[in-house]
Length: 290
Image (cartoon, rainbow, N blue to C red; front, top):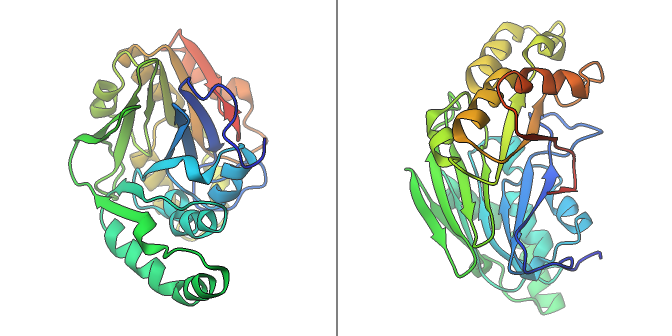
């Protein structure tokens, strides 16, 4: 139901809030974000444009939010980081939330609060809301290792490969009943494989290389954009190799690049993966629960 944590709160669940890749707005896919729900608490990985609305559409409760984890500082992953709190604050968020991610997370948080200081001050005065700043607890991480633990989940980070953005992280969530790994943006990475060893679910970004030429058309910087995509993302074939090497139970494809090309069929996304991985493969879509 809208605004409430759905039934089955005792189980660890994954909801794909946004599955598109890249900063351009897309009609069929929202920007990257994943919600992991365990013991009634919500943990959010990435916060691209539109995430607060997707969060509500998924029936998730802002008072249930316990942690936010940014994989890296690209706009399609952090554009609504501040807005998540500002809008959630008007929708029942009243407890502090720990936020983890690469620098400059602390500086970003301060600047966002400064940018919205007029609105925040007005709502505190006119609507009787508590101060917003204490609800945002940024923690900058620069290296791999355990980053968070409570009575429901343990969260471990690994360094991904996403040139020229560094550091970039993948995250693993271990609950009593399930383990879920989010790759973030990365090319083929032994670190991600090690992090995902034996996981129940691996959500991995995916690039369909034959279609990327159509992304750029006559852009003057097309060559550089193509070089960036090839260097910093994972082809369908390599995603299959990663999942097989990690021995995961279920592979979920997300952060599709290209994310809005009707000529790329489901079969095309799966073909390269299936050459190397024989386990369950799920083609991600917005608001899919796994």
